[in-house]
Length: 183
View (cartoon, rainbow, N blue to C red):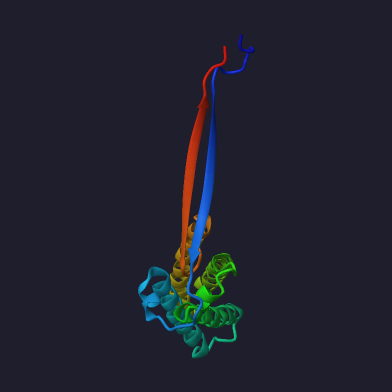
């Protein structure tokens, strides 16, 4: 007789996950990265960063706190994004595939989205004072959206267990064993 509360039969499920990472570790120039969505986003971020930086630099009000903050954010963002773009174009990211590039980019893009939100909002308060504030505000919010969307893509990639460059193939094998009821 079966024990009270114990099912007459039970199922055991075994899941085996295997992953295969395929990367080429040689450094090579590959301009096709620019045609991908992350590549286009990096190019847009570079362009917007330099436009904001130049708008602040040529403004009479460049020494105000708001515009100085935006100049700092966009200057640093230009260099960091430019270096990342160069790393992708020359497959340096793929060469060092064990570095958690997607997590680094996720943190960077999230932080820059927040910085651009703060800086653009501070500049929006003074839009009527000078044209530079209006230009910086508009380009700042557009740049914030570009970094925010890039952050969203990086989050999904990290969540799915992808690598930044190269291929990772993940396969799951599931087997179920059902035991008959014991009498």
